[in-house]
Amino acid sequence: MKERRAKGARLRGLVGAGAVALFLVFAAPACRGKATPDPLDATPSGSLAAPSTSQAPVVEPDPPIEADAGASRGKISNGTPAEGPEDPKKSFLDNRIAKGKSGVAEIVSLRVWHCGPSCTCPEPCIETVTEETGLRWIDLHDEGGADVSLADWANADVTGRFTGRTRLAKSPSGGEPYVVPELRLTSSPTIVSTSMGPEIEGAHAKVVLAGPAAQKLVTRVKDDKPWLVIAGAFPLADATRADTDASALFEKLDKLGIKDAERYDSRAFVGLACCFDVVLGGRFADPKAAEARARTLSARGVKAYTKKGF
Image (tube, rainbow, N blue to C red):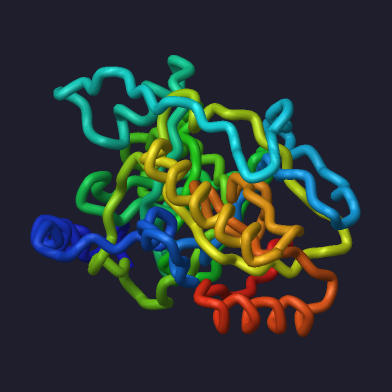
């Protein structure tokens, strides 16, 4: 296969993708007052939990992420998003790289594709495949800097921070070297499909959190109660609305007698997507106990579901 075979056809597909409805698993808005499994179907880190009657959790600090100080029960701390100016002469991706290099905190969601064994590409052969970013080879790392791999031909939605770091990669065909930027993931990739070409439909890139809210230091929770009863998840991109809706839901749970209800930044749990104010109707060691609580809440007017947080 010649290098970047059929790239022209794919670029034409990207132009046409502007008419496709936006669909981003990581940044999907949660419904007011209730949760669905879709928004949190991923994997982040960091937390601010309210005290509960359950055993105090043991926290494991993420390499670049630590705990916010002092959260009250039923409340998490949110920064006010603040984005720097965009350079109109630069692409969406180059603006993200420049901001990362200058220290501006942003969390971005986008889609990537892993070109398989027959491709001629710079390792690890992962490229962005959205209208906003075009086709661009990138490095995926976890928050500690370790490589994150994808199965051959996998399309995945990812969320993370462009650090501003880049490397030059030799072109396998002997052409100009590639400038490969680093994306450090705040959550595990969500596999969309597996195909011999990038899955363009629904593939968009956007900044989901910026400024202090994106830079906020959070702690990952890991103890003997990984099963979460999720009663609501509210996007932190609109911090005021998230706090209002999450507070109202938390108070409702408290009035229903759910005294182990808690609120977390979704980055607290590796099994949840960034970036949500999450209201939990309890955490449990036993998945059956979590399912029983979710059924109880649903019967009492609070739609809830269970998910393993770590």
